[in-house]
Amino acid sequence: MLFDELDREVFSGGQVIFKSGDAGDCAYLIEEGEVEVLVVKQGGEHRIRSIGKGELFGEVSLIDYEPRTATVRAIERTVLVPIPRKVMEQLLEKSDPVLRHLLLVILERFRRRNDGSVPEISATIPPEQAKRRGIVKGEATQKLSLAHGMKRALSHDEFQLYYQPICELADGCVAGFEALIRWHHPTDGPLQPDDFLWIAEQTGLIHEICLWTLERACRDWHTLRGFSDYKTPFVSVNLSPSQLSNGMLVEDVKTIIAAQNMNPAELKLELTEKVMVDQPEVAAKIMQNLIDLGCSIALDDYGAGHSGLRHLQRYPLGTIKIDCAFVEQILSSAQSLEIVRSSVALGHSLGMSVVAEGVESEGVRAKLLEMKCDFGQGWYFGRPATLQELVIRYAKS
Image (cartoon, rainbow, N blue to C red; front, top):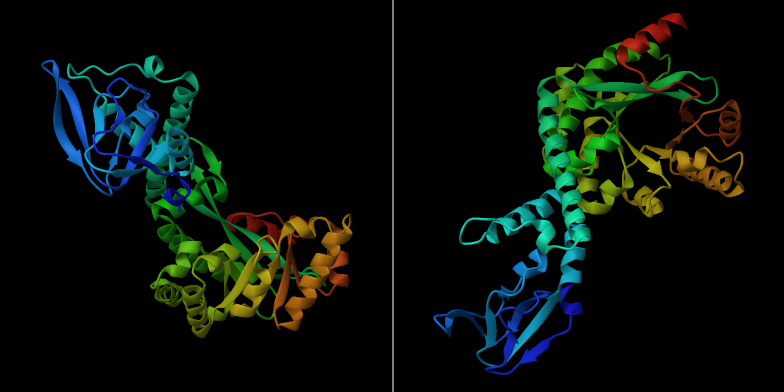
């Protein structure tokens, strides 16, 4: 799609595309034809190779800002797709920071002089470009460090689960708990999920972390269950987007609940809208298999995405959790109030239970109860706490 949007340039046989010493502000993809690469040796031009259809040339100067080191000339009628530096920089900005950093390192090594020296970046690259390289290197280093740290964290018990109660709005009875992972990093201190799970997704570590979370939550459930008088108590565990494309997920869940001697009906698996947008057919099949196993499925952050209604129609959901961004404003925003009210009514009409996230005051709880919302989750009912903290909390109540 990108190349389709770029203009073409046509060169006739013998026409020079660029000369040695010219500014290197553009690379070229050969769409048709053939070119030759020439260098000056012993007072004359010597052909060192030819390049044909589908190949790229002139790309190194896009990054290193050095002048051209060779002359390129069309051998026959040749159609080129020019790729200006601006386009390359836009692509690099959108790419993964580790890949960007590796590319820059490779190019720096490629630029080494014959005598082995490396030109200073500041001498060949504008200051803003040098600064951007430094930022990319920092992002890459941080990402690699966190990815390595997560593998260590799994084996050194640095992850810990916190549990937040989900309560009946009518009487405040604890119906269940949501498991929330935290990382107690040895040098950076406590890290929230948003600080590291995105890296786990990109590096593939998310599968191991999610299985660790599921196993730990099911293990802790025997204690947590004692804090609830609800007729069908539950513990909610979040699944990542990549989990619903993993054919082993159902078997993994089955193995874990069997090992922990847990009733599968007391395990609720939470999914965000993004999970189902990516691979809807695969997601629907795996979700149904989890339900056949006895588990239930909840749609988290309902209303925050763009396809909530379609998900309610397409997937076998038992619960919707209304995003806190709407719940928190129901006393001050008529629009948020109506969004929450209609979401509760819709959920009930489809036979689903409804959880309101972000309940932080008695006024919000009362208004939700007036709408006949089933459950609430938020600081009003309790902040996330470790299992040990919950044991102390509920022993006093």
